Image (cartoon, rainbow, N blue to C red; front, side):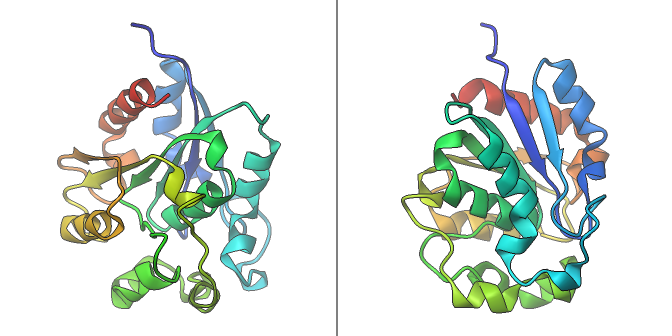
Length: 216
């Protein structure tokens, strides 16, 4: 059966940019899918400075603007890597009707119960080693409950575990999955480290093609 062609929207982690998908993007395109890799604010080629950003909303503007620009009837598969899971969550909250599924690639994954800083508070030392302190937005996240069951909670979620990740160890990834309790599906890429899109792009692409086939 022919897979319906989808659009993938790729969201990088902290201290990265859309460039980090350069191995994965052509593989997905060769399979017939459309791919958009977005630079978050003050990331990649976006000229804003991180010091100018005060909130997670500010940081996520390029993604939310892209989602807003999509026709109402158009849907995408969102994928966020590492801290990009927080950006993903915000887009899911605002545009659940435009998303087939949200894919968390060894990513931070909030829930719809706790304050949004909860996922970072669980392991601040780990989070701080991942992200420049100025871009954590912990103060902002501690003030607001960004994610609800009606928005974020209504989107199908797929978590991709990278078994050899030393930044977000497999046990930490599993804890995120267990904590949220509403993950639709968990997949593993055996042997992949934190940068699966660079070290195992073919295996990641194959996993995403399975997701594209399954979620309509």
